[in-house]
Image 1 (cartoon, one colour):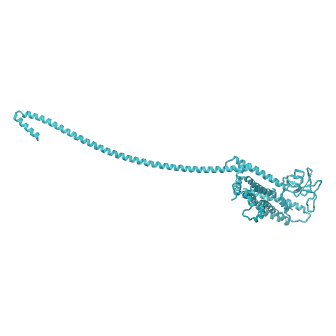
Image 2 (cartoon, chains in turn yellow, cyan; image 1 turned 90 degrees about the vertical axis):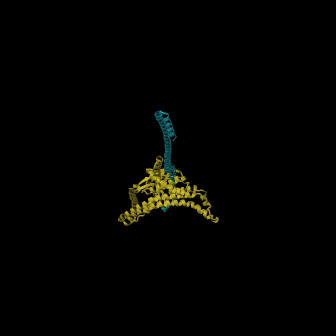
Image 3 (cartoon, helix red, strand yellow; image 1 turned 180 degrees about the horizontal axis):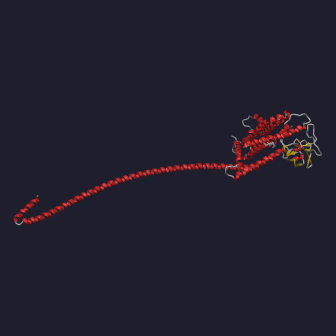
Length: 368
Length: 166
């Protein structure tokens, strides 16, 4: 029953993605109508789908696009600007529309908000399409990724606070939501954290549990068609791995730092080589974490989108019949990929938490 | 250029991620992880306690049944010894009674014999006396008859004496 409905969801997802891509495809064709018909290039659409955005786009193009406007908050030289809704730009993304907020002239180009220099009325571009008369203020907008992350935040709060209340009041066997989440919590505690950190594991448990479920929830939400690519965004994986870096090094004991600045059994002559290597090693571990999560999730999204794009590439290159006959194949492949992505969602959450636990365990291990 | 954008972290997104994640850790730590893990630990403890108490109860039961067996065995041994004793007492009583009875019987027989002999003697004496009396009476009568003369008197005396002497 559940697998059937899951399959339905993915089928729906595929159709949904297809419809979005179709819209882009049409736009592309319209803009190229004066030129001869070229093969459909899926890269811009895919890039658009996996990138962050100031508006949550569902379907449609131009003024008919169905989007969720998100609040834009900027930090300029003169302080905070906004929040104001991204709908002020009327879905314009090439700097044509100038929005004036609190005396700041703002334009949106490739999902970046530029502030025009004092007195400038329109954006001026150079030959390589870079803006000449604007600067980038710090952008603290609630973007699509932030919004999706907030949804994950509230879902996690909802699920786990309900479970927490249930656990507090009910001292017998768990039931309902708790009986689903408790084994996951215990899996993280008993199979990830405990074996890797050892006897001091309790101190790190809240952080690592939150880390696991935060990544898992965002991975899974990212699989819903139309949602954001949160854990496939380098800024988010950077923050998560940076927290790993901080936690690991702040819990590092004498033995840990001793291995870095005075590697045991290394001849004195090799010290000038070994110490820099060890110091670089501090950063490569979380760096690998950052790249691993980002690359896995982004790659999964790119593969799914590419498989959907196959239909439209066939349509533009070979015609409608080819597109129709190819679509069942593409749908099956996308379904397969989506199921793998569910596995990857769990796997990457597991690996990130496992490796973080391992690094903490290595930093806190007693000298033997 | 687009691909470079993919690996360029946005400051705002990082800010919100830090905020959301730290908030999530703090809130979930208090309202989720603590109660859930406490409940699990409590349940674990109660299960181990229940198991150990069950084990204890089982051991107690075993001890109890062993004790019972011991008591039963002791009772059996005691019973056997009591029976044995009783049997011995019975036998000894019987033999004693037997010996006593035979002794008594012997005594009775002895005294009876004695009595008989006594009675016999008495009877003999009585009989002798009686006979003597009778004899005297007879003698008197005879004498009265015979001793009408002196001669016959003499003769009788002599005869009687002769008889008596014999």
